[in-house]
Amino acid sequence: MSFGEQLRKDFGTTTLALIPVAIVINLVVGQIVSALNLPLFLDSIGTVLVGILAGPWAGLITGLLTNLIWGLISSPVAAAFAPVAGVIGLVAGVCARYGLFRTWWGAAISGVLIGVAVSITAVPIRVFMFGGITSSGADFITAYLLATGSSLFGSVIITVLSTNVPDKVVTALIAWAIARALPQRFLARFPRAQAVAPSSQA
Image (cartoon, rainbow, N blue to C red):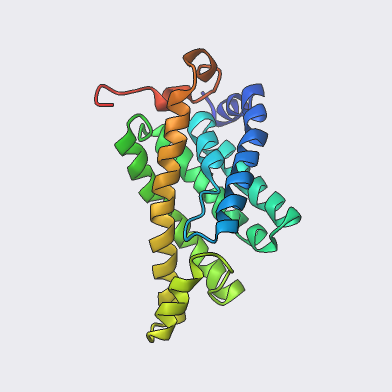
């Protein structure tokens, strides 16, 4: 199957219906966590779910749209991190393509990979656009490290890694659990449903 054919398959009617639902999941859960000022985000469960079920490009679009919409309605900071949100969906889709979402431990490994990729993308944005502080629950880690004499760049790297890796592991596990809980007849409608087909070790 050519890239264009796969793309058309990935963005079929079922995927187009899932993307808005996934964005709502991201926004609602993300707002709750933000209101509680927790050192996690959990605002990309829907993005990872789309990446798993509809492929990396659908995941990328879901992440981008989530943060752009979030930026318009409540938090301009979120819009600046739209590329980061896109990377989440992209990497989740790639991990799913290689079978990492067929087991819970594979999903956890995917979460680590997503967290590292997100950190690489987020650190420059956080440092150069916001001076390391973005009014998230994780800012206290940056502030503490700065107070102990660490450099801004080093403090942000540690903050982003220490918050994003655990967050994305939890996110990936939740998305995996949701996908696995879907009825088989419904799951089969998605173009990448085989990505969560249980392996013999599940």
